[in-house]
Image 1 (cartoon, helix red, strand yellow):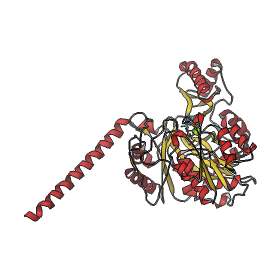
Image 2 (image 1 turned 90 degrees about the horizontal axis):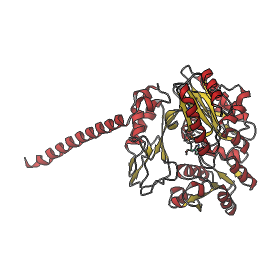
Image 3 (image 1 turned 90 degrees about the vertical axis):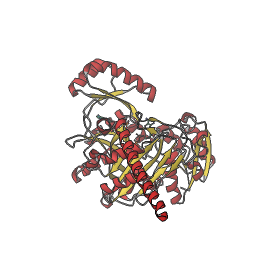
Image 4 (image 1 turned 30 degrees about the horizontal axis):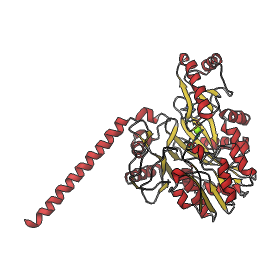
Length: 480
Ligand code: ADP
Ligand code: ADP
Ligand code: MG
């Protein structure tokens, strides 16, 4: 593989290209008119404009991307995450055109792209599942019967859902009919597939996922867990590895279950098997994401393995150079997704120009970003600016470093999740490790964050005043 095209933008495009460059592989960027001056375009050896700003006219145009790849004689296409990364048709078209798709085979993408097909596929492999049904449901009466059997609250989920979208909690029987109708029509319009199903709503779960890696020689391994329970709108904001709640025994069991899930769909490359863990430490299979995951860096830091490098090696047909017994966890890593969102206003997207953008640089801090000072944050795409990742010998050290990193990260022009990240890191529930997916609902409010910010500003003002008075005194001294 001499040349790779990255069919993505932002931080992930840059991150993939950096590893390719390290491996001596040339890189090709694709970009939309909104991203003309983006860092991923500047970084690549070659870059191709593929269309207008809306992703349906650019980053989702598989045909144009493949055409560009052929013209530039590209050997492989890396899809990153989001966009075409979980599009089985795209993976197939890439291969049909004689280019290597750096990811799993399209069959695995198809199976795992549907939460229902995924459940069906892994059923035979002794994988614990969330109580519920494993087929699409349209009949309200039947849904009621099932919900009563499982017990309220229940969750209606879109089979084709993703990114935290397409889920509805139903607390009481009387709300079921109405919620189901909404869920079906939402799934229809958001994913083009109205299939919904029912799962028991686990009341205080932790989201714990396992990184898997498989080659084409029959080796399938896991690279331990990531804890992703700090979420807003069912989507992760803070992730860490390892999780404080897993014992060696559960870690081993979950790892082995994840490997069986991967094997159930003949998985190749890097993938993630997501689980929920309940209060009694029972775990249940949620879904599998057949791509590089946003939060993969925390796994890289605790294992010392570059996952993009492994993806490329596997795509080249190489055998994994390590076995399960060679892998171990070293230290602790924490990631904060820095979104251009306003944590004081319900995490609504906050787009605009990055008037000021200064990033932290220090040992133990890794920043994966795709923006520069003066750039506009486009409204067309996911509003994630960067991933701020810290690594320490202990969890305490990683948390302390995260607070320092947040303090020295300066962003002006848009609101970001940075202050929220600090709120999390300073919160007793997070520090003690005693939290679940309801952290935000339970402990967070804009008012609390505001009063913390005010308190900090007050302290800063007091310090500044003291300094001023000291300076005044010193100035006066010589004249005395
Ligand atoms: P991860 O699953 O890697 O932790 P997310 O769930 O946040 O991360 O999704 C990764 C990216 O893919 C995000 O940019 C998200 O917006 C996008 N995404 C995920 N699933 C879908 C989907 N079904 N439709 C559109 N975008 C999606
Ligand atoms: P997506 O494809 O959007 O990532 P997931 O099935 O992975 O959907 O679920 C996303 C999040 O929604 C989980 O991390 C968890 O917080 C919540 N969730 C999903 N299923 C359940 C459930 N049965 N009970 C409680 N929470 C759930
Ligand atoms: Mg998920």
